[in-house]
Length: 308
Image (tube, rainbow, N blue to C red):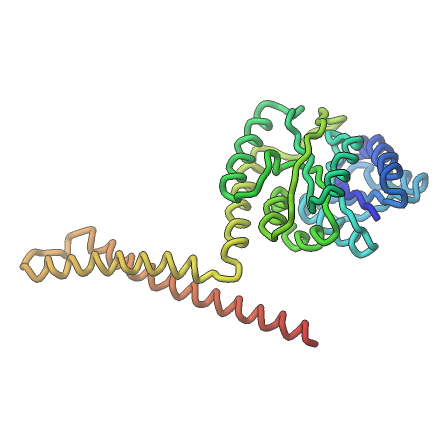
């Protein structure tokens, strides 16, 4: 069964026009599929519009977040609902009407061709210059740091198999929805892109400003750390700590030799730097060991729960 998850924040006018178009495509390529609107704390008539759509179309479903929590938590709620009701394929798309429902065929066809997650790549963006430029920079940096293939990681139009949705759902918090392709690739799934048509926003205004650019890069560092060191944090903290400690020790050793030759060292900034590096190195190493204990306890708890 196919489920299309549409997170929405104050998109009542767009939903009234968009949902019937999505339903038409779903009924063509996946009869019995559902369209789920996740209301992320809208203050407009989103609830009323979706209620009217549900009365007219039984395949429409609705989830309310209660208050605005962000796109990632809204997607997680949608994924969990879809998976709980037996979805085999999950599609996510934005509610602003910029994603063309007719492109759904391309995404599903690529899934049938063997991909586990397919992104609709907006190679020709219909957005403002600033948004296009920052998105282009973001995509390049993400590709370099993550090693994942792709040109449009930030696209909100994606299709994935149920096991992929289940695997990436725990990572949907903050701004992590931008990194679903990166997470899926790191977990060993086959990710792909297909070019899709991109339209100007139907109505309303964008809910994202320049702040999302910096939040996105902050989350990129987070996701890189989690994917590389989640189960071995001491490799990072212990390695950096050991290097810092050795450099500090070398500095203090040098100053000890200088002191033994009769030269004063009490007024040298290098002395403070050496002592500081030794202390920081020890703290980082101990922090790495503490993090390993946390990971070990978590793994033991998970193993015990599986056995019971």
